[in-house]
Image (cartoon, rainbow, N blue to C red):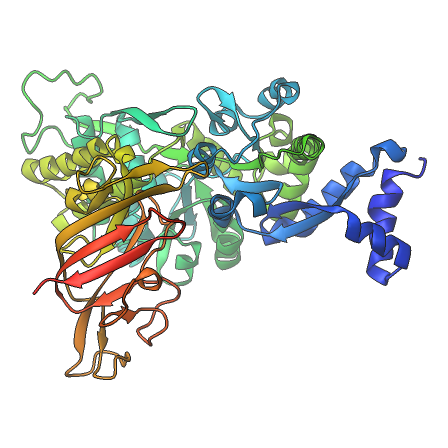
Length: 585
């Protein structure tokens, strides 16, 4: 092979490391090509990219950038991209549930036509769906392994025991063990609704705005039966509200989790390590009279009961390319992203880190096909659905279903209890389509509002700051998507419960005689990307900085205030926000 890119990329970089003057100058003068990936695959990713660029010969093809691989997790990547697109990685790994947000921001360069056919044909169709919005393939599938199934201790349960929920519960109780299922998570408790045939499908336009939805969770008998099945487990007395594989170290004999927990579970269970698809649930026939007269129940057993297999979400890790005005850099970014998601690279990540391939040929590899966790994932996939785009507040609404079931406290819910739980769920969904009118939300200890970025979900529309609000004054959206305006909120009641202060305005726990404060701040409606609070106060007299005044808690920038009634102005007509808080006498 002739000298060229290989020499420049590998030997040249080595020369920089040892301080060769000419090579150092060349390296320093090159623009960075930044890759964001999880720390556990950082070294491998760098090796893979260097291998790719080393195949090009000749000075015209020399890689014109300095390769920089930075450790940014999939969970943090999109938040960082949205914070400052210009400082983002040129390519970055992220989880599919963040795709709508990053598409809406305009930060992505969609997969070019020259790669679309190849990417769609070589990958699992579910992962391709996960990488697409509005029929456009925006990113490259990296894995198809993001879903859940059941790990179990084979010294306590057999494979047959795991097929039926009631049997499983009885066996685990007899062994004085627990079942870990995170029923207060919308991601996990949706398994019961998908199992009975319910759907929650949301339509999103090319700009990432949610425009419509079809949801049948509040239905008879499907939605009610889902609640029955969830209540039997959640309120069984042996259910741990958790999805951690580490629970096997305590008393759990079953944990519903995903491939990311496989090494932990394997290390704890040893020879008793086992995994399988989720179980089936049988709901008795109309024993509480909640089926409406005349409902045709084609899924009923001969005795009128209904049996269904739990569903689940499935999903993928994705690789995105930042929308870069530099045409040459954009082309290199797509070329490298396409290679990093090839069969070769996906198999390397499986062998080194256990990531489940989305590439169809890689899935046929014997080591992949025989992997216990991936086999369980694939078995459950028959009953799963691709995790599409969901508004952020949907997760809060669905999570509340599990919380409400637990609060009910019984393994057999009444018709009224189920009607109330699912009516609240429906109300949360209906509020989502009006969310686009809101610019910001005031969150905190406000008349029971608590901490949520979607106050309308729970009916607290008074605290959502809207461009349609007559008191909003001017309202505009600049080129970066920042919403500007001035909002005036009068007679907001701030409750206590946030923290305590003493006479010197310093926190010292909850000692007798301290003043209990309420906490609040402004955030972007629907997510936490904004964090406007104490630092933006026009006059800080009489208010407390949650972060720097010894009151606890990180960098939340909360405003601490004595419980009472306040008028609040959030003024974002300038380049930075300003908050004025005035106590009402």
